[in-house]
Image 1 (cartoon, rainbow over the protein chains, first blue to last red):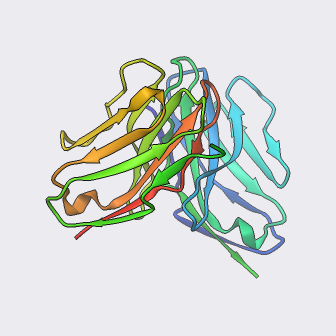
Image 2 (cartoon, chains in turn orange, purple):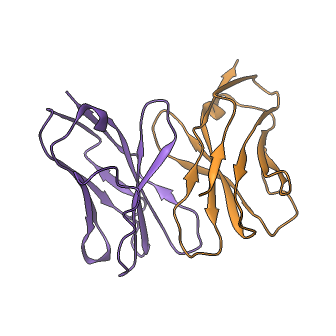
Image 3 (cartoon, rainbow over the protein chains, first blue to last red):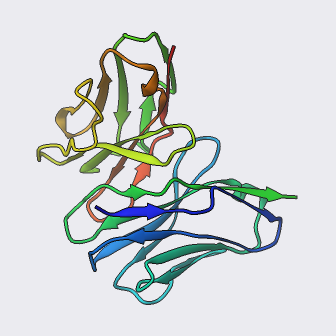
Amino acid sequence: AQTVTQSQPEMSVQEAETVTLSCTYDTSESDYYLFWYKQPPSRQMILVIRQEAYKQQNATENRFSVNFQKAAKSFSLKISDSQLGDAAMYFCAYRSGSRGNTPLVFGKGTRLSVIA
Amino acid sequence: GAGVSQSPSNKVTEKGKDVELRCDPISGHTALYWYRQSLGQGLEFLIYFQGNSAPDKSGLPSDRFSAERTGGSVSTLTIQRTQQEDSAVYLCASSLVWEGYTFGSGTRLTVV
């Protein structure tokens, strides 16, 4: 079974600075997708960024980018120019790409605080 | 609808009572998922529905938990004889095949 590990339960960053959230995963599959979700206090899970395993290029969405290291099974999220609205729980998630519409497997999350 | 709608937003129930949680997915989304999020924990998969296929119930923690999806749309998660350890946020999500999920805002269940 696939597992996702987020080793940082809590992180903090100064406003306008850069922070990196770590995620590692364990799988024997070669075809899969990786995601970062943000969960603010409203509880609404919001998709931040997505990476297909077959793509070598790291995904980027505005201030959010990932460092995808397939051999190391690492998928970290970098947030640049941090804003107060970035404060939330961040979840890393994995989904198989070869077995249809399978459920996401989530890590336990990292709580990010942004200091003004 | 514009998003995934879950009701109620919050539910307090007495131990031993049955509860029903509702999820109204985005129209046209073929897949629907239920997850449970306990305090300080990640999201635990419970069950998912894909079109007219038999649901994947592999994540349901006990036979007190069941779910159905009527007409390929609205889903109801039922917890019978609730226990205090069932207290959690129950999240529903829907998606098209191969797309990312759209989540609802969840139902916070408190069993007293």
